[in-house]
Length: 462
View 1: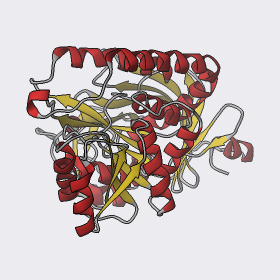
View 2: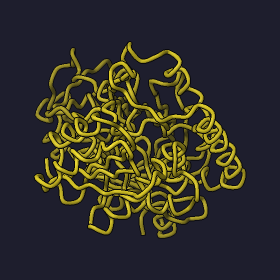
View 3: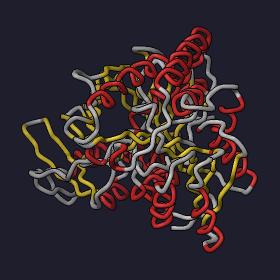
């Protein structure tokens, strides 16, 4: 595939014959490919330069002396931005990164242009146990430095970067020019507000006998990495309020972001319900009153408790607050516990608002926009729009009822389940997989609420 805005960037230093095979493999899946030769002295760049002379999809840049992986990538980033590129997928030159996933990572980047798309390595049995176990310390440290999750693996260099954000991060430090680049760059980008998308990526481990190349110096580079951790932890001592504000702003959007394609590994995608209830419609006299009640165009207000289930947690994350629905203005989720924030969802998209009333933009994302539109349709119960996208299944037991919305086309979730009774809607369950779902319980319903002008200004988009 060829792109005018995204390129593959390969830094290389004394990689030997592996460099040419890596470049050729990358060109099978993407163009253009740029190679930054970081002062190599083994002549490995010569066959690549010859290939570039015959193939316009390939460009070779050269640094006069070895300056380190981070410096080579920074040099390539500056040149790529000057040439009009917006994103680059960085991959190592030693053949261990999965070139066959370049297209998938670029597609996810196109769906989430503001985000860095980070590979999460899946090692085969040939990878040394010490290598796999040693990464756990770096993962633990980076979670301290960003005050939680968001970066699954800070060392795996197979990534797509928004170039402008990476350039700003590199200009913010005199370090991150050697083996410390991979972790420091993404931590600084995270601190600056760049979203992350983690994607699993099987990788090869090549020993020296297999032609693997490593320039890691045990003493020098371990000292560098220790200094990296101390440096980042030192900055965390004054950056932590900013990082917490960033996390709070993002947390309110998490429920919808989890429904966006690519924000969870493909292994988390679930198939449609295997044993759905019978198909229902408004023409069925048993369901017509319930569907009509759900579709009433009136202002409503309820308390809610939201439970978010994740595959990496043993118990749910519990949040609570008040939801307000206005057919004319959208809906507003005012979270009170565990901390305050407001999420406003309407036909214009998603808006975050803090306790002081300041609005915070949410990164533009086509799948998030789609999820927001579906969420609005469901809570307003726009039946015509819903039935165009979902098949409705339902069951009743006395005054209690359940309606499952199963997508007509495979997509971001396997089902959306509505639960209620004679009093109306009592809960919503958003199901991505067995271990990834969101359950919202509603109580203390108020119907036909008269929102004042002050209410509308406080709880909805101006």
